Amino acid sequence: MSSAHAVDGILEVPVIDISAFRDGDAADRARVAAAVDRAATEVGFMQIVGHGIPESVRTGLAAASDAFFGLPMERKLACVPAAPGVNRGYTAPRTERLSHSLGVYSPDDLFEAFNIGTQATDFPEVVLPQQYYPANLWPEGQDPVRAQISAWFTHAGAVARTMTRIFAVALGLPEEYFTPFEGHTIDVLRMNNYQLPPADAAIESGQLGMGAHTDYGIVTILWADAVRGLQILDTDGVWHDVIPVPGALLVNLGDLLARWTNDRWISTLHRVLPPVDAQGSLYRRRSAAYFHDGNFDAVIETLPGCVTADRPAHYPPITVAEHLTQKLAGSRGLELNADAEREAARLRAAVTQ
Image (tube, rainbow, N blue to C red; front, side):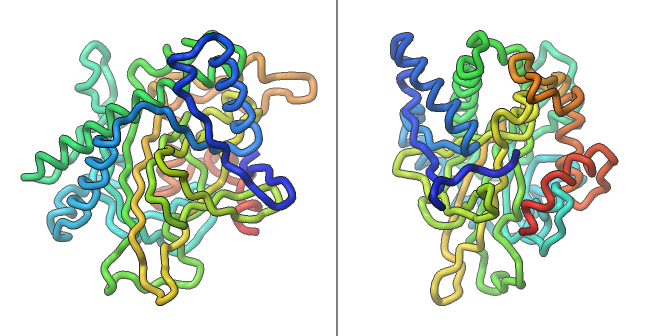
């Protein structure tokens, strides 16, 4: 399942206060877990408040985004990784096509992006492959930007770990069930900018700010400007706008969690429209997606409680590294292997409606 359930044509992304899970009693925690279970089953997205990230950290992230994307292009290009498979540094506009991760071909996506993530040096007690834990690429002479982005990375990571604890309770598992899968997790923060210079803002037919895709990992923690752009797909093939309420973070489930739960929970197809005003100009839309993907060597195998006579196990075991490699190869125009093609095939019809 990769589409959300609308009721009478209306798709609601519920607002859930998770502070009660941290601070409340057993009944409060159970209520939060039940609300998350409903959202994960029916929508695959939720809005969380009570997440504990200070407003100063959010405003710092927004300032850092403006500062980085406002740099001259040659300074941003100095942060481009040496190879397209390195998920760090700067991505120039029209160089990725996220719908290609599903085998659906469309014009190049408009967004530009800047990625940081967990590095091998963050886990000195473990021998980790540089391929999945590469060094970050920072712009020179931008120490405040680095500090502000790093602060958000730390806080968003804490929220992601809170969510996996809630997920465990919602699935009837011990609260720390997912902890062994997160000890040296592959986490990436991707900052996106859609307000391109006028000379770069010509839009082709069918071109999107970011093409239709599902997220690849366990869970995504998203901050975004409260403007139109993000849309999610329902089971009738209708796209619905999602604009966060004040102070909320959007949380959506990734493919690995859907796979873990044998599709009891949904990794929902979503896209970003070009943020164009009535005059045809691109207006400002910024976002920052924190992808919490798990340890590279973690084996994702269907949870026993998610297999029934009516719902046999759909997926063979796979490591996090194998899964992410397949997905990133598709989005960056690299060759997809046979496993990736098979996984993509089940999603193509929904995207192309």
